Length: 327
Ligand code: TRP
Image (tube, rainbow, N blue to C red; front, side, top):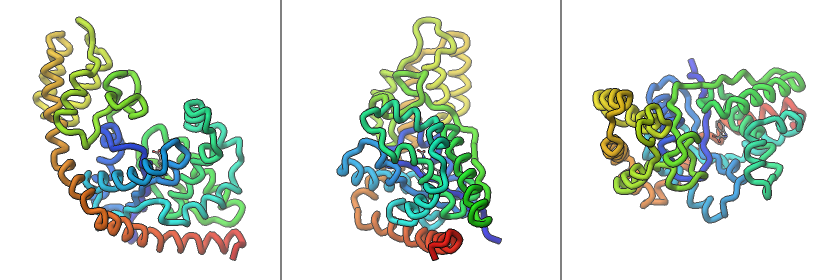
């Protein structure tokens, strides 16, 4: 029996931060290590072209993201781990899907509306067709489950629509894809704790997995908490959520109690949290540095991954080409 296929990707737009980690990467590693799935994890560098990075930034960030995912536990022996642009079938299938998708369906995507309002000087067509490429990423491997955040659900629904439009027009080929929504804590920005943690808010808003202990400490020191007696303040809740993830349960319980009774000392919480986060990622930092110091080895790992992915992708494309009449 073949295992259910899981596909997921991440854009190489910045160093991994604890929001990405708790929201996606940690879950990928757990799915991988369960041994129950056939996992495809890739770096969505083609998707990143729709943003504003320079070529130099992109080239560098692809390597850094690869090293960070490996350091965080993605194991290329267990997971097909690769860079999207190295498997040209993504764009090829994407084009076929482009020709099946009504523009109006793309224009109603929330992420498109969001992004195009944020980068008004660069509302490129790729920003609009972004979810079509995402559908190709998934269906190319006949993906059955996609671990994603709530913000990507709409894209997954469109993936299923596209699969259906294809099947209706050319013959039943693609199956249904299901979201794999795990219970993940919502990680908020340190400085604007009503907004999701994101580097676009500024470096002081995020804790990167690669941050040295001193940096983690300094960022947490500046994190917004509450003014006097502000029980339940979002900044404090966020720090408690993080402590729950990274610190010992007993101490978390104590901090929570003290918060409710208004006796909590934010400085103590911040110091303990800094230690817990830095400790959690000590091994990550070491592995990341090792991987980045040997670029040849890193590229070899990625090449093996794209070879493996390519084989599956070629098979799908050859069948798709026959179905649509290109062969
Ligand atoms: N759009 C996803 C994000 O920004 C990244 C992505 C691209 C993806 N292709 C995918 C995720 C395919 C899951 C499956 O988070």
